[in-house]
Amino acid sequence: MHNADYLSREALERLGFASLGEHVLIHPTCVLVGCGRMRIGSHVRIDPFCVITMSAEFVIGDRVHISAHASLLGAGGITIGDYACISHGTRVLSSSDDFSGPSICGPLVPPEWRHVVTAPIQVARHGVLGANSVILPGGGLGEGATVGALSLVKAVLEPWTVNAGVPTRVVGRRDREGVLAEERSLAAQLRG
Ligand SMILES: CC(C)(COP(=O)(O)OP(=O)(O)OC[C@H]1O[C@@H](n2cnc3c(N)ncnc32)[C@H](O)[C@@H]1OP(=O)(O)O)[C@@H](O)C(=O)NCCC(=O)NCCS
Image 1 (tube, rainbow, N blue to C red):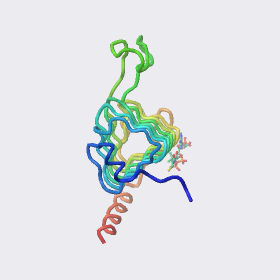
Image 2 (cartoon, rainbow, N blue to C red):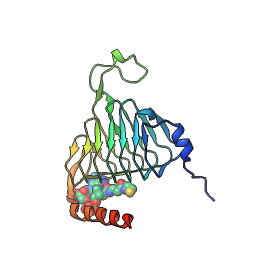
Image 3 (cartoon, rainbow, N blue to C red):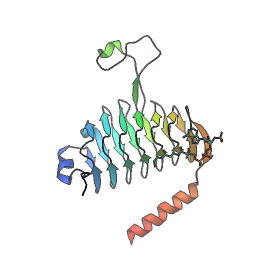
């Protein structure tokens, strides 16, 4: 027995996504705002208690996993490439109040009184964001880049690098050829 069922296909279609692939699992405890701006690929899973509120385009590729308690939001737009993983408790922020300027902060202040920093965020194919990490507006992951747990991403990380820290630094290199060979093998196996 368990109580962790995902939304049915019918329930997903009622949400009115801009596009919706096959084999998509989204848990009913997720809060999704702006589904009409969301394009979701195939073989995607979004786990319990995620909050995705988009006032710009949100695009998820194929075979993407968004783990529990992740928050993805903002007016800058977010793109998540094929095979990317967004781990537990992460925050992907494509807009944020300016915390150091003279403006008042928060969504309850009229917009003309706020200074919101907005920039698109891309987590490219095979990007992996470690648990409880944060991407600020203008940050992102190049293809195959990974980020350790509890890290802060303020810039676009180089492809196939392993990164960690606050802010991140490069702590290693990922096996690009190995990962791409695995991808080819998986595709061949799935073709039968
Ligand atoms: C970043 C990570 C991948 C590095 O693993 P690794 O390749 O085995 O590297 P090491 O443990 O040898 O660490 C390399 C360096 O990075 C530092 N480092 C590793 N992880 C770090 C982290 N999360 N934050 C800050 N620094 C970190 C190490 O202290 C070490 O520094 P040094 O060279 O100055 O001694 C791993 O530590 C990590 O954080 N994985 C994330 C796991 C996760 O979030 N999973 C989610 C569920 S799937």
